[in-house]
Image (tube, rainbow, N blue to C red; front, side, top):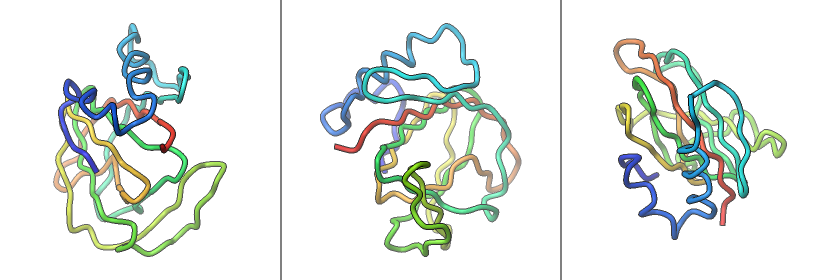
Amino acid sequence: MIIDKWENILFYEPMIKNLKNGVNAVNSLANLEVGKYEFEGGFFMVQKGETQPMDEGTFEAHKKYIDVQIIMEGSEDVAWADTSDLQVDVPYNEEKDAMRLSGQVSHWMHMTAGMCYVAYPWDGHKPVRHVENPQSFTKVVLKLPVL
């Protein structure tokens, strides 16, 4: 997993196919309306909501798409674990490009506005969570094809 400021995301362009197209598409949005948006080489979703307790829910992982999650407003906590250290709860669903996993939360990061993270297929991640107090967020989730 890569964690950085959104302003630095293009440094990772050699590692992430169609990243520049995705960044340009996100930057061209006049406003952050919830929904799904497509661009050449991928798509992204704008999401708004409230976080859930870290001890609830499962980790997720993807095979076809790399997640680039950008916190636009507010904050969230996100847990990380290598998928090899987790147990599969719901097997991989190709249509949803997701599997659900369970395991101990040993590593987590508090993500605030202007930060982003990149989750590769081996990165089990548990987004939209809070460790202490509930948080509100607006985020963009870029979905870019795995190389």
